Image 1 (cartoon, rainbow, N blue to C red):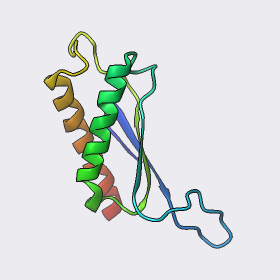
Image 2 (cartoon, rainbow, N blue to C red):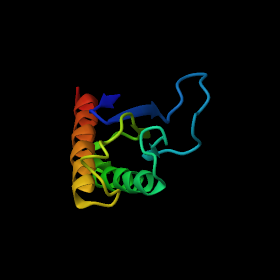
Image 3 (cartoon, rainbow, N blue to C red):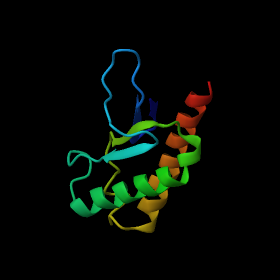
Image 4 (tube, rainbow, N blue to C red):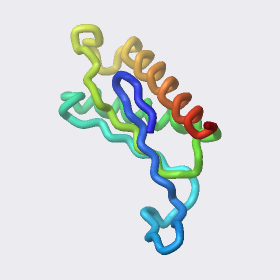
Length: 111
């Protein structure tokens, strides 16, 4: 697991150990996004953050292990600072933090 101020990345192996049941019936990289209404009230904000999660994880797919990953929003972005859900400032802040999160996840994989 990797964390930043606003996001957490959880990982679950897709291959079964001896006697274990597979969680997913697929192999490869799987990415999901969880953006609770608690931390992003407006649907437009939740959808914009999910799009950024999917875009950034697709770009970082080569550095992520073959597993199921869930990126979870764990804190709200300040609405006073980011008034518009589709503002370039919010998109840039989300991208920068997701980049850091994915780098931390890749570093944890390497160690």
